[in-house]
Image (cartoon, rainbow, N blue to C red; front, top):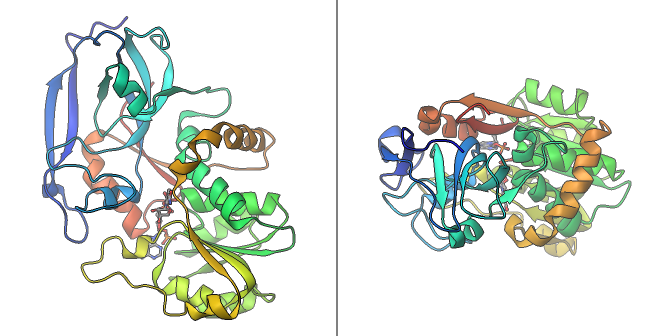
Length: 345
Ligand SMILES: NC(=O)c1ccc[n+]([C@@H]2O[C@H](COP(=O)([O-])OP(=O)(O)OC[C@H]3O[C@@H](n4cnc5c(N)ncnc54)[C@H](OP(=O)(O)O)[C@@H]3O)[C@@H](O)[C@H]2O)c1
């Protein structure tokens, strides 16, 4: 058992609700001593945190699928950590767990908090820590259930996915290939596009920063679009709506192009294409599928093991870099799932 007395917990707290892109002065930094767990509780040392576009939404006031982070609270974040003290028979020191840890070096939970934070042991034989934050973690589950449950792909169909080189996008595209679909990605820049085609096996990728999405869809989707997995919203969504087939499925996973808007969100202008094509557009919130994560994790771990699926993470080291590292998601600097490494194992 680690002696907790000399340990200090460095934390990042939300200091102000941002307007537009979050800036460093919107965060505050605090320290606390690390104390022994209460009866039934545990203390976890944070190893790596998942940095997610959704964090931007959690910083806003107002109703969403989850309550906003309060001003002065430790910023919400999912992550992987190691149990360093346990007064709970279900967890032993050195267990590696996934949990809602928050942006802090140590997270202490009482018995109720363990449940609330979704603390669960993970098996590193199935994948590495960073893979557990990516393909085997929340983004992978989003891609899996969004594509399989909402999209319901059939072999031979054309699937388009935006944010193709990102965390969710890489899973969606690879899974759609495994299911026998034609897969066209949309991503920012040649390097990302080359990677999804050459390394992940997508059939094509449209560089929305280097050319016209409309022309790219025309060239690479000669039979139209059956499934569009939308991670970005905005103008790209409108362009894809113009190319959908009858009975197409559009999965609204996210709209990152709109998250830092200081003006009203740009909704789809081409929505009547849904009517003409008897198509549907459906939102997904990954947490709704929590009961079925183990099934998806087992399937995805199998693909990783067989080399049918790859998992790329972009790892930045140091909790103090959090304010700037988060911004990588919004300027497209992250290449793969963005992970903040807080401590080496
Ligand atoms: N519904 C759910 O339950 C759920 C769960 C997880 C994630 N999501 C959503 O899924 C989406 C992807 O999340 P992720 O974690 O996989 O992030 P990610 O794709 O790994 O990273 C974000 C990427 O978005 C792209 N991007 C940023 N600004 C853009 C813009 N203005 N236009 C087009 N693309 C832009 C950038 O890629 P480029 O370099 O290609 O521009 C950036 O790398 C987000 O919208 C997120 O909110 C939803």
